[in-house]
Length: 142
Image (cartoon, rainbow, N blue to C red; front, side, top):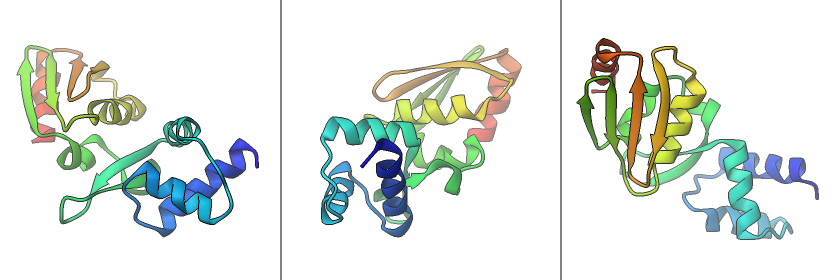
């Protein structure tokens, strides 16, 4: 099976099942006779652009980015625990391992008022055009 076919299978799994871990995706692929290493699966998930969302009970699950997300404010409640502002920079606190996911969402949105992002494990810096734009984005996220 080539990469495109495998990634299409992963997309189908995400659309048909509510899976919250890579291990669940790997097991679902195995049930279909598709063996994949953890490294390959991680790379596939990054390339597909999957997001981790929280359901009404706070449980994380994977979703296709285009499936549910249209704007940064739509996912703020799922990822952002705390927002601080220092002039034209927003500091967003997330759960461990989620800052880079949020950075990808922001970067893909391509907003002209956001110059770039820098992600750590649980902290994301959002560099805005100026302090006024930073305040506007902060209000949008709150």
